[in-house]
Image (cartoon, rainbow, N blue to C red):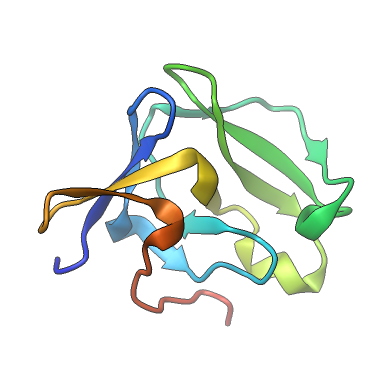
Amino acid sequence: PEECAVFHCRSCWTVLGDSLHVCGQEPPGLSVLVCFKVTSDVTWKDSLLVGLEGALLGCAYYLLSCRSCGLAVGFILYSSGSDLAHLRGLFCFFKDNIICYLLKSQMIIEASKVNFPAVTLKE
């Protein structure tokens, strides 16, 4: 509870998730918050996209969007190499596209500046 936060869409402030559902550390090269559960305001289509560059090169994923404004807020990894296999099926929020509201301090902060306790599902 000390570090509880609510994740909001950067564009329209819709609630997308919270820190109680953070379940993994961000992998090198990806600036994401990894969660096992999100709100119903996070949507995705059944069509897969394929990463053509960067950390998602060659990975197949579903793009997550904010139901209210349509902003791309993250992805669900469908297939990947072994280095990202632990993220498959989880919700990965782009830190650049979400804002965090810290409950205890009642502060709004950039997601890229927040560090949550180490939790890992990699094993």
